[in-house]
Picture 1: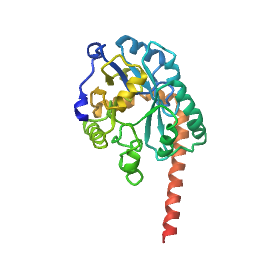
Picture 2: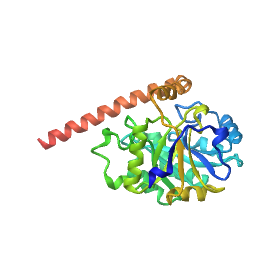
Picture 3: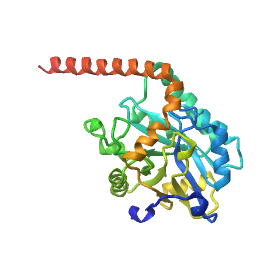
Length: 286
């Protein structure tokens, strides 16, 4: 049962890390994400101090994952968080950094430059040539970045949900109700589970952890997720914590003002295009 493998508990890294297990924060953003200020050097320092690892899952880029892979004493899983054409996100975890690089260069990099985002099905189709674990992050969080949000009710079907290997059952900023909904989804679909802070500052790193009972390497860790043999521990977010998470992004927001202005214009264009398409469909039907 999924619920038995998920523990809602505030992690004290100095006390709760058991070295008979392997731990990883499976959703974290480095400075290479447009909304993160977490330096690689600070990430490495914290992981070394407390003895846990992470998956660098930057938004549509892989520089952070590549840099972390060079620190051989840190348990680091190559990952990325991708936006699809509908706006919701997908987490991908690769067994080797070379596979992530090849996947990114072949399928993602060309689309990012053109703003021609892949569909979720295309993102998953492209992973079939690689050793990769796909996960639905924060599926019930508010906003268009979540696959089970009301915005996508008419576009997400059971066949798509069934294609993923796992569900993120604790996201560090999510309230208890939304994390419980994610647990229910994983249970109903009989999927693997992960947990991550979704942190954008080093302070948040490690507030939610995925772990297995062995001295695992990347292969055995990801295999355990697929086989539903891992566990997740972390504390629910709340309104105050959610505000603090967003305040932690302020330095990156200020630094990337031009980027956000450009994104705002792009978002307006996207909305206009969708309205035009809907209007044409209505005219065609009538």
